[in-house]
Length: 392
Figure 1 (tube, rainbow, N blue to C red):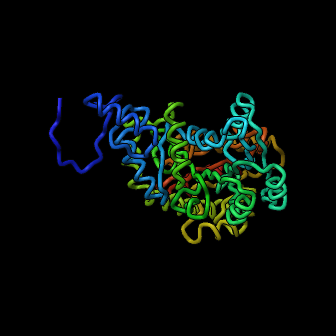
Figure 2 (cartoon, rainbow, N blue to C red; figure 1 turned 135 degrees about the vertical axis):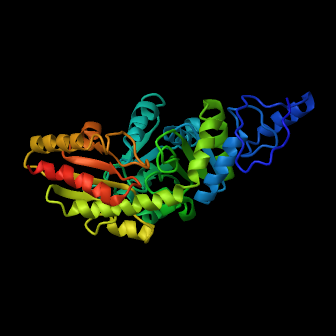
Figure 3 (cartoon, one colour; figure 1 turned 180 degrees about the horizontal axis):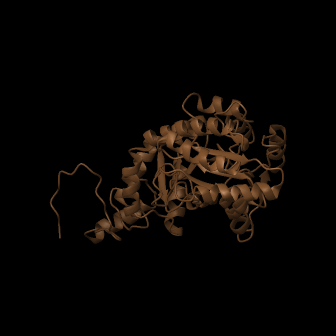
């Protein structure tokens, strides 16, 4: 049944699994053009290939990222899979070089998929005492000659801010493509493609969506060949965001910049508050003068903000005491600031580091706080009261 045009002001939601190609001639023409893997086809074919609702939201992301193209997928991990996989060109594939200070799920993907199942030649660049040694990075680039270098603008959960100018310069010197996970930085603080990155990815589940009610990922770029490769890979692996989730993401993106500005404001307020509390050993937040990569953060972000995550360590004379106090702190906040294994939501949530990253970060007193957009004075009181109870 054909529906008359409606003068709606919102993006329509198309749930079509397959699209009406009308006749054999148009079908042949459309499938022939599909081989060009255009971002927005003249005629849609099938929901796994492309969808007009999803393309409309991708255009919103292109405007945010100032990119030539953007592709939505069902999770941030799917975006990582696409970004890495389009450089795996059979026997001619060059090695991949990953910073080790990245999301734990990405490191698990490297171990269980890229190495264990695909037998990919993967190398890791490690930080030393929370800092990157660029002499060592250049040595590895020169020796390995990787096809791509993968890093995070702000690392999870220790919040190391990368000196992106040095990284970009070194990667280009050795003709290495650059993939940036900018989930923590977001396009509000930094747009990697403008500084020379080849691909930028986000877990749109986090700040771009910002409400904890959908999962999504996005991969953005400017190079048309990389776009065509990514569209082809997405199509045959089924990495596609549903039109319903794309539609909801599109509505949430409209408030992204307002929300993230408030995340940054609240996080700096809380980091400063925590830094002066007697029950806190140290606070990691790039907005504090004490942060090891404060200089890099100011250089990269200017006066726009320093992100919405604060990592801090609760005081204790032994690991057992730290662990016990950390558990008490989490329990005291259970009804107001819940323990939820994600970040970037409108509500403040927390995650103790040791239970999640124990092998990598055996730090029993450390908490990763994803700061929301609530009233910051209320947050200070809630957290302050929970910390004060630890002194009794």
